[in-house]
Image (cartoon, rainbow, N blue to C red):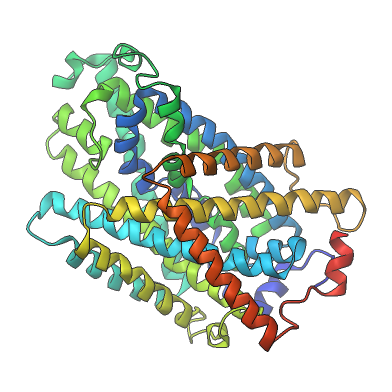
Amino acid sequence: MTSAQVDTSEQASEEGYERGLGSRQVQMIAIGGAIGVGLFLGAGANIAKAGPSLILMYALAGAIVFFIMRALGELLLYRPVSGSFAEYSREFLGPFFGYFTGWTYWLMWVVTGMAELTAAAIYVNYWFPAIPQWVTALVFLVILFGVNLISVKLFGELEFWFSMVKVTALIGMIVIGLGVLTFGFSSAGDTAAVANLWQFDGFFPKGIGSSLMTLQGVMFAYLAVELVGVTAGESENPEKTLPKAINTLPWRIALFYVGALTVILCVVKWTEFAPGVSPFVAAFAKIGIPAGAGIVNFVVLTAALSSCNSGMYSTGRMLRTLADNGEAPRGFQKLSATRTPALGITVSVLFMGIGVVLNYVVPEKAFGYVTSVATAAGIWTWLMILISHVLYRRAVVAGRLPASSFPAPGGAVCSWIAIVFLLFVTGLIAYDADSRVCLYVMAGWAAALGAGWAVLRTRNPEVTRRSEPELEKVG
């Protein structure tokens, strides 16, 4: 691995992927990646816990996510590869961290896929309550599996339209909500007011502590923003599209999270929302627009399917990266005739099928179980991005590596702030009895990966040894 920046078209050729994702698709994947089931469904439970102060939690977490993405952006323009943060962990922290990060990111998307399948089944139950959740989850799993096997272009096109539906609908919701606030139409107009943000027991109705406890759910809502990094190996022009996608993140967060929640909580007082029910569906039901709640339910259904679709895409690529480095079975290296990592996608889908089983066994708890595990795995991934960025900046200052064409504002300082924040959220997860179980799962996962690493060291010691050039680069 050289210290010079790699020509991206040459890199793509070496990886074997098709550069089938155009600027239009990458931009919409980036926009849609910040709008998922964590907002559409998870916000209901968080509103019940924190009231209007949830808006502040989304804004705070959004600022940290922007720091993370600018750190990733600097690394991506230094060396754009499909393995992304797993590759950077391997380069700057050593082979074990690349191995651990790659497998943990795979786990994150597998369990996120389970959460999205669960959410999709819940949304379908809105129209067809007689259909068991597990049946709906299985049908969606099979359909999206077929899409991902065909080609990256089809994945990108489907994701483009999924994201288009989400973006258009959210903007429409905001406009309608502002209309209710301004002109007072519908029955909701009688009680809609900006004062709803503080009239009912204040902005922090359950206390600041309860508000902070929602941060773990809020961070889950932001999972997938880093997916832009995985698309680097299949983007037509990553030097142009990736910075643009990352730099639009602040306004996306301000509009789609902070803006949408502010409007919803002004239109409907926070005490009327309940866990397990999308606040957007509930708000439109109260506004009384004909079929409005059903339309919103369709939108949040596409959001869930969009995220599951992205999960299948990313897990197959990550397994192939691991196989290329000798850290997963070599069969995952093979690409299909359509240049997709078909075996990796297939295995990932089989594991996502566990979500179907959970929907059969514990349908009322399935969403909570898998989101907590996904959040813990996501926090690890983000920490690796930030730590790799700090080490990269240190190497640039020392003259060992070339500077990126997309430097993060604030340099390593913002990365350190984000690291401290993520460690704080991890502490909150450990404090909460309901979410603490995910740390036990992650401990078991770490033990399993540690055992796998020990086997690798025995069978193929070259894989687990950092090369001399890499040692020179990071000092």
